[in-house]
Each structure stands twice: as C-alpha cells, then as structure tokens.
Amino acid sequence: MHHTYYEKFMTYLEKEDKDQAVKYAISLLSEKKIDIETLYLELLRPSLSHFSCKEEDADICIWKEHLRTSIIRTILEISYLYILNERKPKKASKPKIVVLTPAFELHEIGAIMSTHFMMLEGLNASYIGANTPKNEILNAIRAYHPDMIALSVTNPYNLIVTKQTTDEIRRFFPEVKIILGGQAFSDPNHLRTLQYDYHIQSFADLKTFAKAVKQ
Ligand code: B12
Image 1 (cartoon, protein in one colour):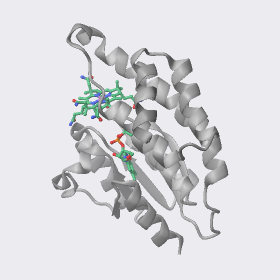
Image 2 (tube, protein in one colour):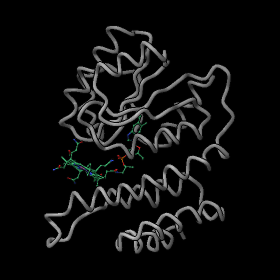
Image 3 (cartoon, protein in one colour):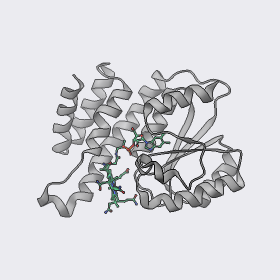
C-alpha cells in the first residue's frame, strides 16, 4: 500500500513539482493514511537515499540534489505540527538533547528526522543546525546545559572533526552524554577511536534508547 504512495510521491519529485509533492505528502498525514514514521522512512528517506542523476544531468546533479532536499525539508517543517499532536507526553525527568551536525557536515535531513523521532518518543530534543563549528558547540553547552549532545555524521571525511569535537566535549563537559548517529557509522569501525555514550542508527534503536533514558 505504501509502495503506491511512494510511487505517486516520486512522480511529483521527478518533475521537481514542489507544490504537488508537498501537498500530497501532507495530505497523506492529514487524512491519516500514514503516520510520521511511515512518511519519513518509507517515502522521504528513500526519495533521497535512492537519488541519482541521469548522465545528461551530470553538471547539474548537485543542484538537483539541493532542490530535492529543499522539497523534503519543507515537508519536514510542516510535519512538525503533526509531531506536536502525536508525541508521547514528556516526563519531568526527561533529558535535554541537542541535535546537530559537526563542522563541514552539510547533510542534515537525517539529523532533523531523528530529532522529530526523539520528540515523538517524548524526549526533549531540539535540532540546532548543520555545519556547527566545535567552538560554537562548546559555547552552546556552556550556555544551555543540555544533558546530551547528538551528532549526526554522514560523510566519513568528517570523522576527524567529529573526533576533535567529541574529545573536547568529554574534556570540558564530562557530564554531557554523547550520542552518535548517521551513515558514517554504518561501518562500526568508524566508532573505534571516538568517545561516546550511545550509538543509535535506526528508529527502532531510538525507541529502546528513549524508554531507557526516560525512566
Ligand atoms: C541530499 C544529499 C546531499 C545534499 C545535502 C543537503 C542537506 N541539506 O542535507 C548536498 C547537495 C548538500 C550534498 C552534498 C554532498 N554530498 Co551528499 N548526498 C545526499 C543524498 C542524496 C541524501 C542524503 C540524505 O539526506 N538521506 C536521507 C536521510 C534521512 O538518511 P540518513 O542521513 O541516512 O539518516 C537516517 C539515519 O542514518 C539516521 N540518522 C542520521 N543521523 C542521525 C543522528 C542521530 C543522533 C540518530 C539517532 C540517527 C541518525 O536517521 C535517519 C532516518 O533513518 C546522499 C545519498 C545517500 N545514499 O544517502 C548523498 C551522499 C551522502 N553525499 C555524498 C557526497 C560525496 C557529497 C559531497 C561530497 C558531494 C560533492 N561532490 O560536493 C557533498 C559534501 C557536503 C558536505 N560537506 O557535507 C555521498 C557520501 C559518500 C560517502 N560514503 O562518504 C552520498 C552517499 C552520495 C553517494 N552515493 O556518493 N549531499
């Protein structure tokens, strides 16, 4: 069934018809045909992960990627309203979680989705932004006192900056827990030299994590 929704959604994306793509995705939510989890994991995520360019579009491939991401981003922002309605009640003892991508990491859709999944699970999570320099992260911890920092890393090139960032968080704020997620860690070897408390890859893992930290 969702396969049909995906196919129809893709016809709009392939035509780069933002208006129809956004309207269609949101209508599936508002008419309760699918929930947020299905929208994100069965429509939005594959529409990006399986993105490829035709040979004749090689010169404008990055442009097209940006265009598609901007459509998905608009859908994510509108979905925020649905998340506020659907999320599990927060508990008083909930940890405060800040989600971001480290310096040089521009891939942010996974970070935004995982923030929304944390909210659905009743966690107090906020997405701060992409490409966040190490010193900005340290200053923000000093000012906002989050209990946890979640870093989303896609490109393995950014593991070095991730290591510098996590080492300094540990050094200056040992009480702040570090969560790592994103495609760069689909190879578990990439976690080896990093200091962290939780590695979360899937929504299923995130549900287990939420249950554990909300107790
Ligand atoms: C969109 C996109 C871009 C956009 C990003 C725009 C944006 N605002 O986010 C733009 C055009 C900027 C871009 C640029 C580049 N990209 Co790009 N991009 C993609 C693309 C097509 C989709 C990524 C995406 O959003 N996927 C959908 C999300 C939902 O999936 P996800 O990130 O995996 O997230 C899920 C989980 O991993 C998890 N998760 C993610 N983060 C976190 C964090 C936490 C805490 C938790 C709990 C969970 C979690 O939750 C999500 C939901 O399940 C991928 C293709 C692909 N196969 O992924 C290439 C891809 C990631 N890009 C790639 C490359 C090489 C680049 C560039 C170097 C290209 C270039 N030549 O300039 C630059 C680098 C930019 C930089 N400095 O970061 C490569 C990376 C290869 C590699 N192994 O390193 C890929 C895989 C393409 C490819 N096949 O070669 N890209």
